[in-house]
Image (tube, rainbow, N blue to C red; front, side, top):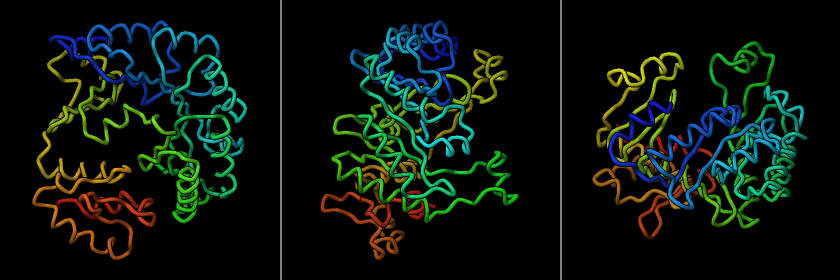
Length: 336
């Protein structure tokens, strides 16, 4: 990864707004390894003063020593993979931590001086109830967290859950169950004064994730490491080999450690529809150009069903009935 960093920034260093160490379990890495990566990054693409530096961590990796090391490296934001504060749900999801470890990791981080903490929570779990989801959310609010990332449970092929459902050993996922959790959660957080700024992300005012917002606003970003994706902010998207060994052997060899694609105008417009419709600000119809009139025809059924609207400023915004179905609505508006 350090070799890739050197190759990606052969010219003058480019200052960055954010660093994000994640997409896996970087908290498992020894402090010395993380420090070496940070040094390489700061040399080639320095983080600007006051920039956001996020580290994804597992609850079981959070201890006084690790927290001290992370702070010394300049990490100022933690994203903790809590998933749930209920033991039997954590066990069902094959998580290696329990509810006490989840709560303790947050308290330890706060005691160590980390204020900008986000946690992940999963809803729509089979055999779960709305009251259990309410317990999870209220637990998070009681712990004075400033940011929540909430995701409906999905089943990936070839996973243990996929085979359990296929064999009838686990209940299949229910859209109705997930939608109930989602609707309650969003309404409740708004009542509490939270900023529900994207379908899966909510925060106290002024605590939006700077890094994630770059994705939704289609700003450029550099992805380093196996499977990492990059985007130039225009028409070129690139992704690294996901196989660790192949990636290691290929870095620096005839640009063979990554693939890239050139996005046509249609692809760019469709990405804008997908990402911006998920945000509180909505989709600016002026960006759509000639497609602006056609998309209104495509979305007529959703307009009639009061799932979305165009406001007086020309922004398409999802209404309460459409929020849970954002991806489906967005795809109905794609340029074919």
